Length: 139
Image 1 (cartoon, rainbow, N blue to C red):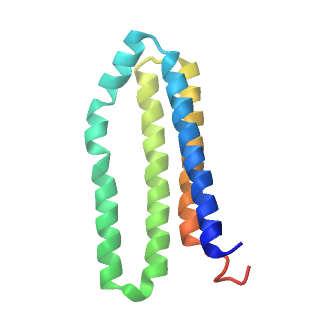
Image 2: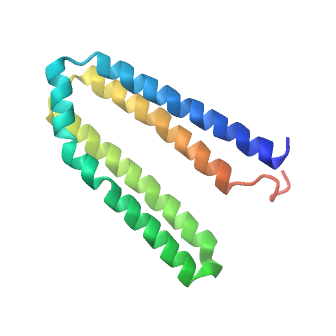
């Protein structure tokens, strides 16, 4: 399998996992009552506004660091990936705390976590397929 085919295959797998995650998330929502859904939307309204701030900051930091030190691109990308993982973990921890504070059913929270886990695996596969090139390593 050549590099383009390999990366395309992982892209397809990642997209299928993302779709699966969305289906899981939608199924979890159907189990909530109307009042639970209203609490969910109201509870996360401010977070939807501010969620892009750290992402934009991270992208800006990545761009500036690579422009200032292009010879350290590998280390910069590794640091950005590590910070992204930390951001995702922190975001999920905060989301679960918020879901619990809203008094949503434990069954919904478990389904939410399963959906997020599938989505995170998809993102890791997607990023990994872009960053790792087995053809450059003699694989």
